[in-house]
Image (tube, rainbow, N blue to C red; front, side):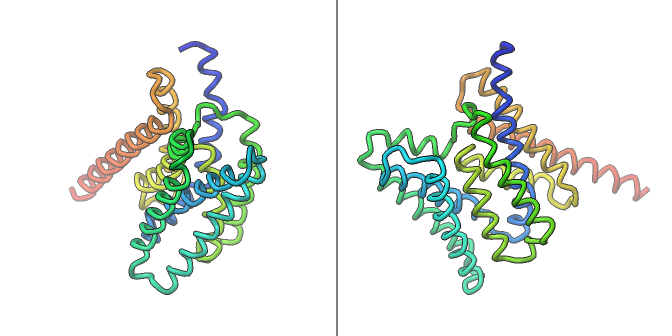
Length: 256
């Protein structure tokens, strides 16, 4: 791997850091609420908004695409907030139905598009390796705002605020990294470090996953998004096993 190849890692690694900055705290809240598949549903809705605007408008401007994605995502998020209020006992099932409807709607819309398969692949797997620094300034600024609201106003305790911030965060990230990595970035770090109060360990799992996945993708010429997902999963499993062994040793020592 040449120096020039390694230089290409800067923007995608920074994109991963931007995504993780909001997805780590949001993912821990998703896990705590037991609504694991909400990220897939909202990410798919945001992607559906992107597909729709490309069908309606030829070569739409970036802000128009972002707005369409956000409107689709926030509409779905607020609808799920309503469902949580009245159908909390079957909320996961409702989320699953929303995801399936969004996926199949995308398939139906793209059925007669000669580039439909390519568009769908980009939506799901993303194009992380081809991210540029210019693609990151808006997501970075908005992510700072999301984090400020999240921590300063304790948005996790307000369900409506949680759903709105979740929709905004996913809207930004799905166009950077794709649906698969949105889910992985939210759930795997939170799952691997559950029970810990610090966010540092969760962010570390995600960061290692992005780094190793990007390196592996460049070395093997395999798709970047799926490579990062697998690398993050391996980092998460390794972390969880290490924590379990450490806890067992501590319990064995204290029991003597």
